[in-house]
Length: 206
Image 1 (spheres, helix red, strand yellow):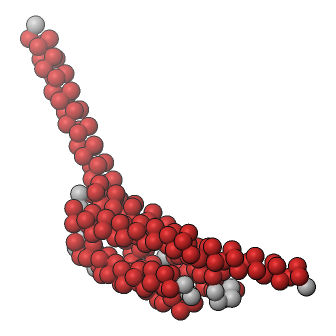
Image 2 (cartoon, helix red, strand yellow):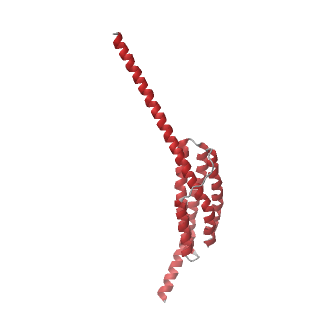
Image 3 (cartoon, helix red, strand yellow):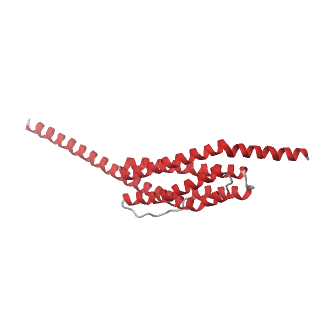
C-alpha cells in the first residue's frame, strides 16, 4: 500500500515536472520568435530609411520634368512630407533604442531607375506627366506595403510609439497615392490621350 502511494506520488511529481518543462520550452520558443521578429523589423526599417532618403533626391527630378501644375503641386507637397518621413523613421529607430542606419533598398532603387528612364524617353508634356504619375504610384504602393508591414510588426512587438509614428506615415502615403490618382483622372491622362489622338491624326493626314 505504501509502495503504491509512493509510486502514485512519484508519478504526479513527474507529471508536474513535465508540465513545467513544456511551459519553459514554450516561453523560450516565444522569446526566440520575438527576437527574430525584432531583427526582421529592424532590417525592414533600415530598408525604408534608405528608400525615403533616396526619394528626397528623386522627387525633385520628377518635379523638374513635370508640366501639369496639379502634378507639380502634388509632388512638391509629397517632397515636404518625405523629408518629414525621414525624420519620423529616425524617431522609430530612437524609440527602439537603436541607431538610425540605412540599408540599400534594391526595390526602391529599381523603381527610381524606372522613373528616370520614363522621363528620359518621353517628350515633355502630358505623356511624360502620365509616365511620372505611373512611376510615382508604383513608389507609393511599395511604401504603403512596407509601412503596413512595419506597423503590424511594431504592434505585435508591443512598440506603441513606433506604431503611432508608422501609422502616421502610412496614412500620408495612402493620401499621396490618392492625390496622384486624382491628378491623373482629372487632367493628365485626358491630356495625354488627346495628345496621342492629335499625333495619330497628323500622321494619317500625311
